[in-house]
Amino acid sequence: MTDNQPPVGLSEKAAARVKALIEQQGNPNLKLRLTISGGGCSGFQYGFDFDEQQKDDDIVVERDGVTMLVDPMSLLYISGAEVDFVEDLVGASFQVKNPNATASCGCGSSFSV
Image (cartoon, rainbow, N blue to C red; front, side):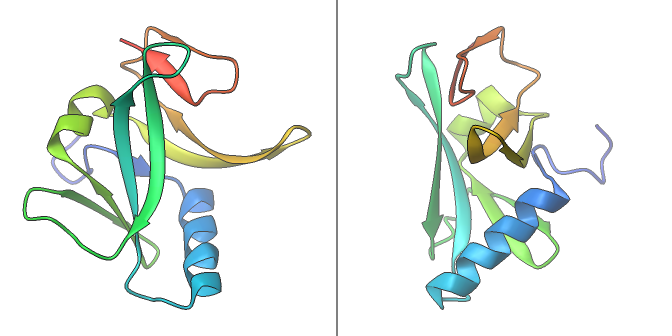
């Protein structure tokens, strides 16, 4: 990771999907918030939500006109990760490619460190 790169990445496909979802909501002030919480089948789980409020200590990642927010506590578990949007035969979802995860569940929504 260089000084120019954000501590968490947002892929082009993920940014495009977030942009489309924000347009559907009709609220250009929305930002994607990525959080980590305890739970899930592997110990921690990723959470995605929309938020209008950016907190003073949020990490801000911008790509292609969309903003992703990550709180400092969540960043401890996902520094160096990239959020992607994947469409396959099973469905479509945001997925986190997390180099800090030592194990993850089959659906990719939870992990352990």
